[in-house]
Image: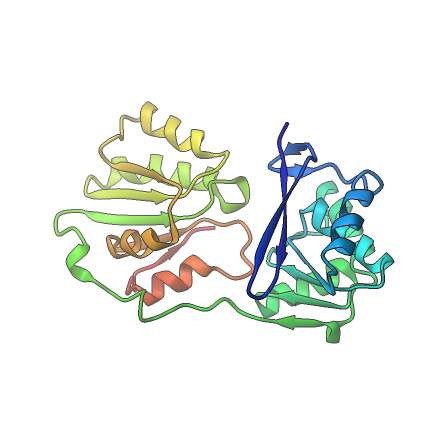
Length: 261
């Protein structure tokens, strides 16, 4: 059985509860509401929680916990960092669930102004009840280092979760078209996810093992070193509320950045 993590933040203590709730897709639980209520209620009362912070529009446990917290008279805050559509069936269902979940939420936080407008429209929350807190970059850490870049090849860097919404299908197509036309181009790809197999397949089929490097998941401390090796940063995201990797790229001195969508 998979176990879902339930995080509680204290000062100066950080506690983690391992909840025996089965996950069914992408580390998400089924939105049951009733099944998780006794366990979540027990944790909230036992730890004397005053404020519950839910994160991500796709986390069923986060929304269930916020709804249970409101039944207990607790304050709730929700953070959303994704852009979502309005037309397809998945978006319609997700947006309706989000509207119900945030109906009595005390406050919402978004990472960009376009993200705020998207959340206001999707969840029909009051515009004044949503704040914007952008992501930040430590510019003393992410600094340019041209000595790390190859003098013989053009290195295209991609740092992203390898999922559909990050445009991995587009990235695979770009690799197949660009590599035969430009022998000096190399791809350096950092990140992991369910779409990694597609890039591995392209690399094998087109015999690009020496030109496409898949680094896998990166630690935060490794991102700077990867970005400094590149001449071009490529972002293929289908939607982006706030491109954090793009900001890191700019701070690392990759002026010739690419955005393909």
